[in-house]
Length: 279
Image (cartoon, helix red, strand yellow):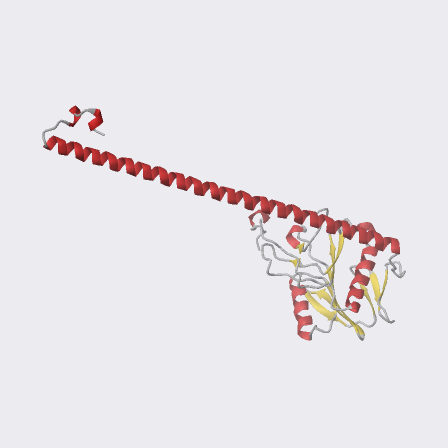
């Protein structure tokens, strides 16, 4: 497969997908935020190189916005958590080609066995290393790890460890708990959560500013195109009038020449006719 020259790609949009909701239920939302808050806490000192994203549309194929998936939670090593310009989607070729390493999906009532299989196949195809499908009622997890270029299901109980993250998940109680590499239970503090909320708010503000700027530029471009269209129309009309005047002058000259020939046939020299009679 040849390397893709990104300068050759068309300037297409990779939009966020409004039909994808962050969660379909309160418990769904709770587990997404539990994972995101704990994983961001775990990598709080590596935000410049580890991104933890929730319900962000991921586009793995450069130049094709039809291929996408929005995992509930994904972990990406090699990209910053925050960008000054913000993110509306995860466009892989714009993120230095970084493939999300780990993906979590929280089961909801609308999910089917076929959908689980289809998502496993999709994540396998596009390079995910660890894929977790979490059921909440009853508590259960299906774990798929990459082996020989395939995501193969592993048999686990209520405790399992992510080799990539180096952390342990414990679902022996009523609530999923996450333990750090040092064995301590991860518990985001109010201060940490407040900082994350403020960063998210700033990112949303930046995204809105970028949208407003893009809207202004689009409006100015449209107005410029309308002006250019009006000027082009006026130019065409002026050229048309000039052509009509030219044709009229040519016709008058031909009429004048025919009149001179008639006078000659009558024995009258048209050059000797007084100017006031020649009009």
